[in-house]
Amino acid sequence: MAGPGLLAVLLHASAASPAEHMTRLETSKLVAVIADNEAHAPTHRAGYNGVAELRLGGWDRTNLFVPLYAGLNLEHIFSGDAAAFGWNIFEPRRAPMQLIRRPNNRVELREKRTEHWPLRSRLVYEVKGDAIDFTYYGTPLEDVWRKHGYIGVFFASYIQAPEDMAIQFIGRSRPGRGDTTPRWIKHLPDKHGVAANHRPAGSRWDPPVDDGFNIDLVKGISDFEYLYPFYFGRSGDNVFVLMFEQPRPGGELRFAQSPSGGGKGNPAWDFVYFRRDYAVNREFSFRVRAVYRKFTRVEDVVRLYERWSGEKVELPPR
Image (tube, rainbow, N blue to C red; front, top):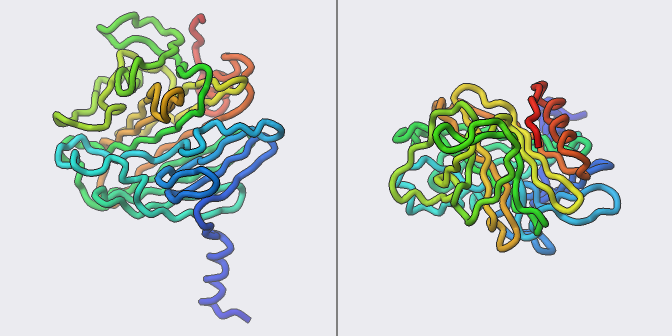
């Protein structure tokens, strides 16, 4: 008979079973491969954590993401402070991660901190039907963000050669920068780093950064703002939808994009989260749902968000 200490070890092992560096989650509608920062065969490169493969269930075996890279990938941690400009901006992709397989199609990636950023990160991915529920948890272990007063975390998804590289969302032009009538906006930046991120409507804050700040998709602020926290892009007959919970006080979520983040013809459909109300050793979090399915109608995308969020969307004319 196992003693109390051994029993506790066995119970812990059954609740959280570490995998090597990648694991597959599958439903009848979706196949997702979750990876840490290590390379794995046949083509996935080191330094791209998150969803290494995302495919529909059944006959369609095309990976939505560029096979070398990933989606929902923790890309940057930043503060806007010039002291950080000499550091590698991809530190979160280089630091060791632990991959833990949980029950019920759930995986956690854990990163204790990066070389210079004392931020403990926990990324939780759970596949349900045609959706991935993603939650990020961050805990600052020291305060190296005090100069501008925010913690920035950036997530990237590198899309494999979609015919249409734009994203679409319900938004308007910022006050003083164009038409403020709510409308569907379909946007593709002219080049990387230009008109790259879109703030929520009602925000009166743009993150301060020092001269020389070197993350282009953060400083490339667009003239648009979104009215509802969801957007979508199309790849062939399929649609990829990113839906975000309304940030808690002290947080702000921005859509971000690049026409060439994954190489020519491979756009990046990204997002960036700013945490202004933070404290050392106090965890913060935000939640995202990513849906990948056959495209039917734009109205069906809106219904997805309404059902998930409980929020009613006022549809503008198309």
